[in-house]
Image 1 (cartoon, rainbow, N blue to C red):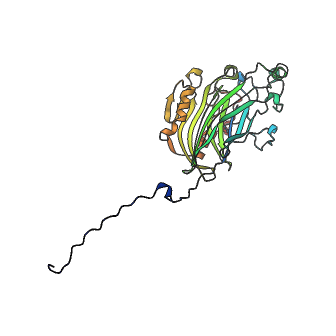
Image 2: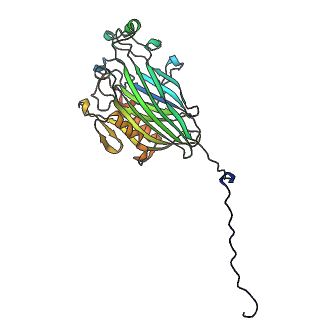
Length: 353
């Protein structure tokens, strides 16, 4: 009231002060559960699914199996023959060690080959080093930062059928033989996001195109993930000669990981390149088919490489797949798809669901 001497309260002035210098600021530590920098086994191999090769392969003996995730073996590396052996014309395996940033334990081998008497010197077990196939793998393995690990690898293998008549004698005396090499080359891209717990892995495989080919990656718990499969084209007579770069398969997938770096069942498919085969059509009409029916005709290595390497820049073509579904697709794929039928074809019960 007037005359009581009361005064209206005034707002207090805000005092200004300098902020704490950056070097004196104390952040808050937030614990993160990172995926372990683990080791992974990579396998890629060439095999013939039938009991014997087709006529164009001179009826040499095959591997009598469909696509498989079974372990390769050979006594030259101390492997014991498993109960259900999985043989291949040539196989290669190595360890990808993300912690040491190295590829180790590279091994390349061929399982026993033999053929009919008129054109074969008898079985060749490939225990003599002079007849071993050759293989290599190289590339960069890096940790761009604490939350990520990457690998950019390229590798290859090549070898000859030393059961062929006169080939062993020629190799011993001349150091060479007229028998052509079976050639396969591949490129692998890998990225692990250690915080979000997943692995992106892509592959591009190319070479002669004969015989069948398959590749997979294995974690420390024994879980395996197919990287791709290929049904052969042509015959040894038409396709083994020369340094060929026929694309066989490619893929770009993302697989969930646990903290130990082992595969979970969740799978995203970003891209898949398959050779679309058509029975009785010339080789030049074969196409490569990308995921979701995108047809790419006469694709070259550079285009395929770009397609795989850039796949993760787009939304996944299938984000609701699973490790088991993806593996089952390849395991039960017809290993003679679009090939002319032969009396020595693999029994369908060995691949069909």
